[in-house]
Length: 384
Image (cartoon, rainbow, N blue to C red):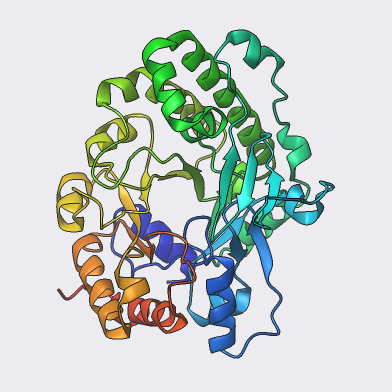
């Protein structure tokens, strides 16, 4: 099998020759410091580092590494114009950390591995506030001019499965609280329901337009389309099922239905945390693939997930970034890879990758151990 045949076989819940591997995707890439360490370890410091996302401090993974570790997917996404060359004047906090404004007008501070929110913009929960807010324009924020050519070339060559990303996460709930603040948006959903729905409505419309701009160019050429929205914390969802079904699910159903009307690609949905109790709902709104499979969270045991949802969902990720990859040694990583393959790969439906983008605390030896173990241990038939 070539890479594309392998990936699509697995995503169709059949067993390919080996478990497909993702490296360099939106949620399975390396953060900038981790990428620099991997380049140094492999003597490839001459390869330039390209920033995928300034907010998430992630890197595009060069084809050298994708080929070295036999990754089965190639990513197509519009370039972020803010990364290509922002005209913002540099601003710094009192502690010297850079502050910048993202596409939604939210101020963020580079004070660690991520650009954390420095200031929430929508302070007054009124419909008038939303009417006068300077909403972003995806056509100005992202460069879509190359995505058709890139996606068509990969599609026509037929060697790799093609993953499309509209340039951002396509998130709904997250973007609302990025604008309002999380406690404030939860209060809105309880006592300012009209405002909460109006904000969700506006964000949903923005995401649909962003998806349209990408899918009109590349929708016919991609195999997987990525969306994300973190709906859970370590021990439980952020909200009750009833609140999710009232405020989040209808807009997800609308967005995902719109996406599926424009492409035959399988819908990949990323949510960190303990999302088990929402998975039936996510399947109901059209999710085909769950990422990242946060195995350290409550109720996310991979054998139980496979038994309960393995015919309805594919699982993408699963190699623990909470403890094993940052704190273990290569032997521990190999055991982790064997465990997740044994639980998730039988019958197909598993794409191996890290649970989340690998941070600077993940030593390059463990990145290498994960990928080399996947190639060795992921051969079908799976031996538990």
